[in-house]
Length: 269
Image 1 (cartoon, helix red, strand yellow):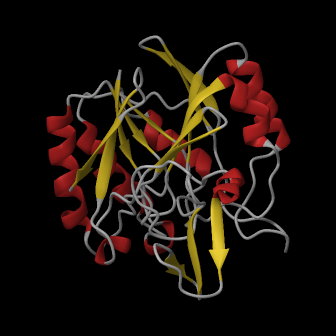
Image 2 (cartoon, rainbow, N blue to C red):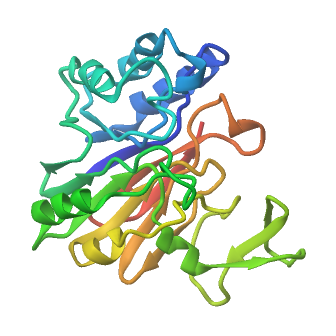
């Protein structure tokens, strides 16, 4: 099974045509079985009154190819609620999205979709956490299987793989006045272009689900495209696909995932 991974389109009034044209081209040429939008499909703060217009501009690109979605932290930063966003998505005959958290069985694969939330209600974390009830739901749906998980914000466990420095270090990337790089002798492919931005609280999502997962796929961190294994589970980080935000710092791209081999192809657009 081939899945086209599209993260962080951030469609909005300024730059919409520049964003949509290359995404349409890659969809038409990719010949994939499924498209997964990994959140922040529309930049909510920039489209307070016209969210549906800019969401439909993206979903119209899918043609007849089945697609599924998860929420990002910017999707519902507007006058449109998550329920209303889901209603728009489900109006497409080729949309397979069932809700905020759901499972699809497709082409012999179990695909798990989790809403990683937006912002945490409190001082302990900036970004929201995946809640215990979501973890219990996921476990009940994929227990005994080997699923592929899709969610917007990467799990906090990624930070166990990264060293932080106060001074410049060879091979480290600067972010917020500090420097970050993967730990020595850690095998990875792709690029660490910025500090990953998971929630500051670890609710145990990965620890509870890892025995039932073969891969986890994330968006959110636009400059990162790395892939590595943690406890036998492949973490696949997708860079931003839109031309409305971080493309001045890094070229927009998508990935195609082969669900059998777990190999990916990054396509710059």
